[in-house]
Image (cartoon, rainbow, N blue to C red):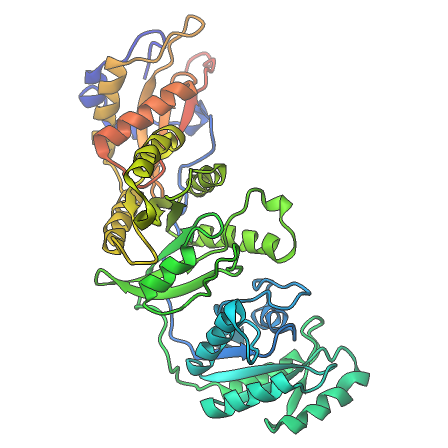
Amino acid sequence: MQHDAGSGASADEFSGGIDPEAWEADFDPDEWVDAGGDLLGGGEEEAEAHAAMPVLAVVGRPNVGKSTLVNRIIGRRQAVVEDTPGVTRDRVKYDADWNGRRFTVVDTGGWEKDVAGIDLSVALQAEYAIDNADAILFVVDATVGATDTDEAVVKLLRRAGKPVVLAANKVDNLALEADAAALWSLGLGMPYPVSAVHGRGSGDLLDAVLEALPEAPAQRFGTGPGGPRRVALLGRPNVGKSSMLNKLAGETRVVVDPLAGTTRDPVDELIELGGKTWKFVDTAGIRRRVHLTQGADFYASLRTTAALEKAEVAVILVDASERLAEQDTRIISLAIESGRAIVIAYNKWDLLDEERRYYLEREIEKDLVQVQWAPRVNVSAKTGRHMEKLVPAIETALDSWEKRIPTGRLNAFLGQIVAAHPHPVRGGKQPRILFGTQAGTKPPRFVLFTSGFLEAGYRRFVERRLREEFGFPGTPIEIRMKVREKRSRKPGK
């Protein structure tokens, strides 16, 4: 096929002059240079199948090493750990496997008696985990011995009537095993000496856990093959993510406190909305710069990024009662770069007066111009206002995220816009689009085969027209080029 790089392409060349099947049959990959990353043949993530599994709740007073032990059980550093009491605040689920048997581990915040405020909320979350577990792993600091708080936890566990495995933690060497033996006094049976940090004794402990857990699961997580759609709640600290999850769940699923940064581990919950089951994940608030955070907040930011990568759609909460901050735009950019579908929820709408609503619209036009395609919902996580609008917005974004345009229709469209608005001439040459194809979905990814390099402004123009023609509300679009390389042909060819 011969193309004149200096002339504009006609609409007929795309709509009738080029047969997409014949073009692809004649396609020689060696003649093209990738000008922005290879998107051809990109694998698409398969939906996870969620099997029913028994549940183990890990409980104990603060700073006895529960989260460190959870990381040891699941075989990776997933739970946020810091040498400070009270790092874990919510009940957080992880999948675990031992000797071929799978189960769910629920990490909890430290339980304390006679507490108030956020500490009371943390204790209530731990009690809820106990009530909904099949077995309990009670962690005690063997180097300290049984405290009054440990004795109070024992009374709580006896009332629950669940099987209990007693872990005597921080037994880092043989000399400390006598400390573990002293915990027989709790009346819960054999204390298993273990070092969560070094892994010492963890195998025997897990064997005991499997004996305590039922063979047949008592709870079912998931909705069958494919599993529920995964939604991450994102936003800066104290914007209302945990309040929204609690309102959607219809219970106090996550600790809520005026203190910014209450959530540290991603907390997931299966929620029935609009006749479907969704997996919502509450995440730690993303602060100004991850590298400027310390300790638990640093690792919480990393967990939030990981939760976003596992999600299909990001619901980004913005505090409508305050001026849009740089953090808000940075979080939106993070979601776009991750390729997730996006919905923007303006929270605390009940606090707005008419003047604030006017200025908010101006701020959106100015600061969020790069994401005008994202569905917007105005909600109040506190009162539940307009929560019913969230599901249609999420479904719209997901439909666009998975949308595929037929090759023939795409090239007819490209022919029309190139004929009406050809690329500007640069250096005496006018690059043009020869052919286009959609290389994948989740998000939609397009590859344009061109006779020369297309400027960024022209690529943005093509994206804007793609959205005008085909919609794509709620999803980023990736456009890459493959530029035809000029090659001298050998004689006789």
